[in-house]
Image (cartoon, rainbow, N blue to C red; front, side, top):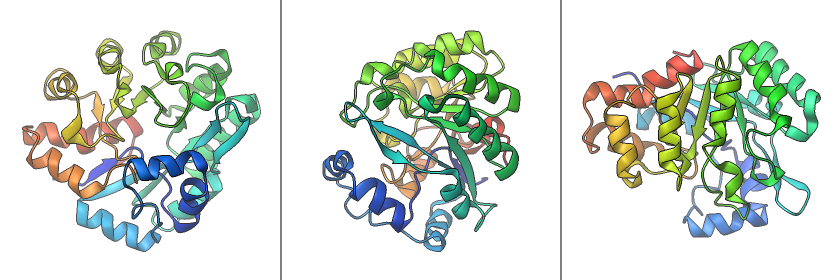
Length: 283
């Protein structure tokens, strides 16, 4: 089988883990809660590629995440495209860059996305809206959606609850309905399953041709049964796997989907590779 494609893998270097995970109060809580102490020490690029090889992962998509602290009016994460590109260019056949977006930067942020796609070869955009205090269908995002539709690149966005202390209501999957109606050409990925509104996310992925559902950040053995039923049947071409590393480790997740989830081989191949390859236009 072709190696898996991880649609959402956080920047894993020692410098990034120190700055964005261990160095942030909001994430220190998550590290203890999810028992990630060993996973947030950071890892070299070469060692990470070896880990991918052992897990049967061919590519990972790494986003330049912009994340604001709710009520504190400061950025928690402000990872730049240049930071991502520095890793991508070491192994361009294994890493794929995904741009980030701060909605308050308006057209300047849209121009940065265009630069990342046209000049750096990035293949999409990722949004984390909670700390900005606006829903995903807010007008401040519409210039980005229009540009991504023009460029032909997907927009991935976290939907569902926020594990950080931020208002989860802003990530309601139903808000993607407006976006998909207003931008039918735009490929939209609702990441993190949409839980606890998973059925909303399933309904939108079924309804709209260009809406897809990411199962990243959730170990596959804990997916809700309605979602498992969907990806086994009418949703088999609409679901994409990801790790949200370091939240989920690659090898246990890939092994479980291939061997223990009760999927036909061709369905496991769709979830782990083919759907992501088609949506993002990568091999």
